[in-house]
Amino acid sequence: MLVSVYGSAVFGVDAQLITMEVNIDQGIGYHLVGLPDNAVRESNFRIAAALKNIGYKLPGKKITLNMAPADLRKEGSAYDLPLSMGILAASSQIKAPSIGEYILMGELALDGKIRPIKGALPIAIQALKDGFKGIVLPKENEREAAIVKGLEVYGMDSLTEVIAFFEGNQSFSPTVVDTRKAFDQQLKYPENDFSDVKGQETIKRCMEIAAAGGHNIILIGPPGAGKTMLAKRLPSILPPMTLQEALETTKIHSVVGKIKNQGLISVRPYRSPHHTISDVALVGGGQYPQPGEISMAHNGVLFLDELPEFKRSVLEVMRQPLEDREVTISRAKFTVTYPASFMLVASMNPSPSGYFNDGKGGSSVTPFEMQRYLGKISGPLLDRIDLHVEVEPVPFDKLSDKRPAESSEAIRRRVTAARKIQTQRFDKINNTHYNAQMSSRQIRKYCPLDEDSSALLKSAMERLSLSARAYDRILKVSRTLADLQGQENITNDHIAEAIQYRSLDREGWLG
Image 1 (cartoon, rainbow, N blue to C red):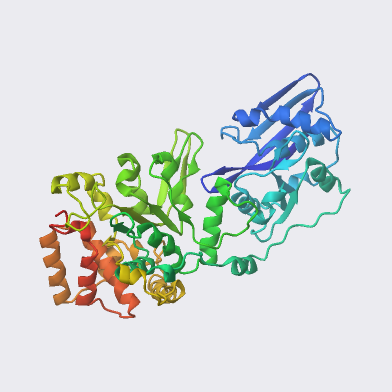
Image 2: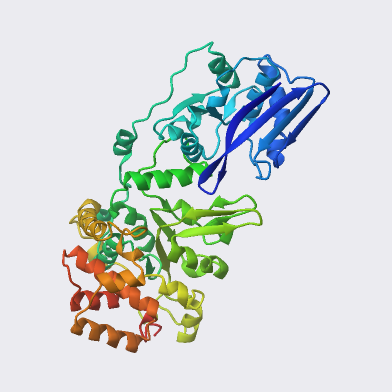
């Protein structure tokens, strides 16, 4: 008897329908074809044990299972559930007339329990596109999949429950999630607040500018100056995620298996990988490609502490994602693309000793040693960072000040107002939502300068030997400064302040 059941394979952040044809005929053997990997090939052992332990059996006949399309590699243990249900239906051990109306995915334990899978959200989205009535998957993944409207989602604890569902022996209700209500309920901000930061008013100003325009920023200062503390508080002043951004972020975390029945992710991600990370772990890839840290930080913040300590190869592979806001990974038979629109926040010491070469911190390194230290970060990478900011240690009188500092909520209101201006500006432009994402053509359109501002910028370009990319960065930051003040035109003051935030381009900075 021939039976078709349906599953799904995840490639990148999207899914593709997989048809599993199960044929049982005279003879003996178990033949699984369709480019399965080792985890899929081992499914017959899990299936046989699970069936026996719940009172069924693996038929002693010739079982042929074809996973189509046959030229697409199948990986993972999530095909256990559809394969086992196909075997039961094809061997007439159960009657499941509606099995072809649902997508089935789940890993089987030897006692018949169903374990969670990765990528439930993109699988549910594709199931809806393909016209399926619903999806049956592990209980732990039900809220994640139920985000998709118009699809019946059934979360099951065991293979026994799945059999009862298809045979109609037990009544089950689909999981329903009010996406908007869940989004509003989960919408919250990190516990880290800028009201905890004493002093550092200039750095807070830079953080506000970075958040308002989505700009990348690097903090340069000695140990203990507060670089990490400031970086951790940046997400608290970013504008709330839109529902679309929340769905995009949830989709990526679903592929990695980091949802844990949480449902919709409504808080902007904050990722802080260790400096020993590999380039594959940072940008994604591997034998079976998975999203890396920069994709996990999509719509959020990626913090790289002690930037010069990262391997040069790791930093260089970030250059293209910083520009294109996506990562493309190519293999011989397929190509996957992961979104990577994140704010880069980096920190570093000003010298190998950890201190500025100004006589205050005890640094005795030569300008050559400082230049070699800074040389660990390539010029093209620094050019892609809009704001270079020096962080000085906080003096005692500021640390002991009892007056509360400005809260993240107050700063976030100004940031959100500036972002609204940018949303209106780029409303009809695809893939551009805030100033940091502007292309060269958009910069010319939205960042016009008067004669005085143009002369000031020309003088800075010549004196600091800035690159064309640094020129664009200054204009983008100037546009954000104008938006924060609600001004339509960029002025001299905006250009002058933006130039100040190019510390690593200034002559004499190395001492």
